[in-house]
Amino acid sequence: MPTYQYEALDASGKPKKGVVDASSSDDAIQQIRGQGFFPTSVREQKVKGGEVEGDGGKRKKKRAGKAKKKGKKGDINLSLDIFPIKTKKITQFTRQLSTLQDAGLPLLRSLQILESQQKPGKLKNILGAIVEDVESGSTLSDSMAKHPKAFDRLYSKMVNAGEIGGVIDLILQRLANFMEKAQRLRAKIKGAMIYPVVVIIIAVVIVTGIMYFVIPKFQDIFNDFEVELPGLTLWLIDASAWVAGTSPGQNIPGWVVIVASPFLIFAFFKLIRKTNFGRASLDWLLLRIPVLGSLVEKTSVARFTRTLGTLISAGVPILEAINITRETSGNWVFERALTRVHDSIREGETFAEPLREAKVCDSLVVNMIDVGEETGDLDVMLMKVADNYDEEVDVAVQALLSLLEPMLVVVLGLVVGTIVLALFLPLVSMIESVSKN
Image (cartoon, rainbow, N blue to C red; front, side, top):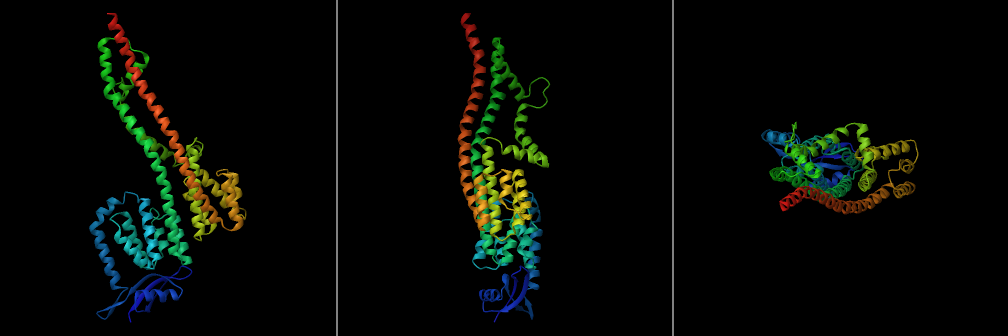
């Protein structure tokens, strides 16, 4: 009967190794689970040349092969490491790993399959390193924690809770659901912003082109007829000269400033957010902008309630779950509120009261959390709040779009109307002077 070497986790999450005699790998997995262990790797020991090849020789050959492959593709991988890993790829990996674990496939084999399916790049390198760590006896959560850019603290802590409870397949499923819902929320907001951003960019390009190419032609016509120009036309000609870079004493053309402005503004805000005071001020102001502030608030509430609810349902201790949620909330105002909640619970008080005092959520959210505390279903209530606010975010996005579209039309109409009026006022004077003569 074949002998299978296995690596597994016990009920406390500690790694265990051993061998079992079984007719097949499925039979070996059933025997290991019967001993109270959760198998992460099951391999048949093959006898070759009087030696058992399964743990030593075979693993060394695999690692040598991997090292050769990395050596051949090292330059490509280094060039790809400068790009961040997309959240969509991590979400797809989580869903695939959840499906494989739910099907009963050993963890190590699941990771090897998913690593082999990845295209060359940073994620493939990280999964290769995780496969080697798990193969050498490390837990999946510890291996993932070494790569925070791909698997953040929330991810690794949830996986760790699943390992301890022996329900890693269920935790991965919840984690995949959480990431997919969060990704859909971000996609809705980004998709809604595409239309106004594209319209603004096209409008700026067209107006800049008119200033650079068209206005100077009209200026030459006005100069030939020696017409006295009104103030609005003179202002338009000066603006055109600034865009073209022909104003007296001008060093940088205006069109360069227009092109560079979005990048400079983005870098400026990034620099400000590096400081605690700047980040706190920007987040506080953002929540108080009409319409947009409501959207940011609803998005933040949906994010923190879903994150906290997912962590608590996974079995992560409440204080640690609040700390992780605070780090991933993305808004300083909510971070401060969750800090107060953390201190309140640590001192034996309630969750809802400091949240009510912070006034960052509607009373409905605080009341639902209060009910969840009293009934012992805090995670269920948090997930209901998150689902409710996901729907409210959709409504807020549509309201913002409904407001932006007419505003864009009005602004563009004013800009174009001003240019047309400034160009035709001198033409009227020219026609009048010609008709008198």
